[in-house]
Image (tube, rainbow, N blue to C red; front, side, top):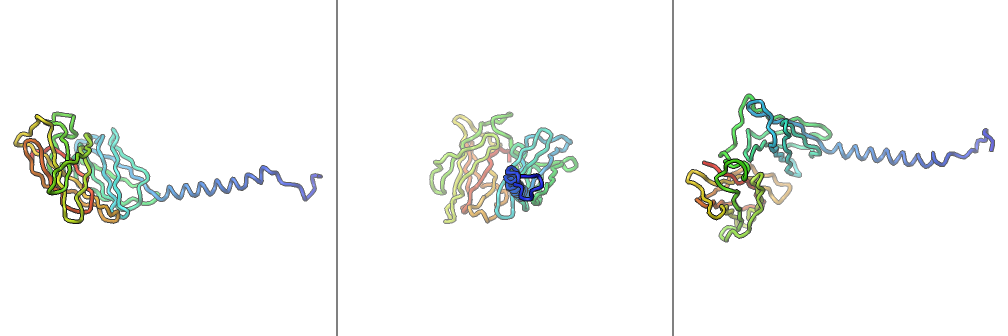
Length: 252
């Protein structure tokens, strides 16, 4: 076939490469579209002396359906970063050694955008929200007692189900009973031989997370607890939800 022949055959490699180029382009467009469906969060936590707050937890609660909860830990320089957050309105709470520091913040995460959040207490020192925790976390510092056991049961029955407790955050999750009006109780038991002095009390704070994902997460609340020298008994109001609580030791 002569070079000037108009019926010259095309290069087979070029014919194969064209569909591959199209597929590659479609894949990149799909990937960029998926990434744009989420947003990110950058921030920093600084204490009243201007020092970074390292190892703190930033609790993020999405208030627009579908409701969800996210967490991110601050680094040694106080910075924190969270990728792949669903767009929507959030409330953020800084938790330092089990205590809520300062008021909750509100923020809006936008699709494909980065949101800035700053916890800066240099001008307004943060104070713990509620009674001060004497053991943040248990197993470290000079806590007068070890991490107690947490037992669950329906109201009117023996609390015979031991709940798993995180020793770093002193947290647990428990069924709040149910919508039939029957609540639940939490028994907090110290180890054999350990006792609380009259000025010390075991307390529980937490939130109710409804089983219906469309329902809003409840506000931070403190359970009604009756303390004794060997532990405490706390009542969970009956509702169709899971209670996620935090056990702490206080003088109040």
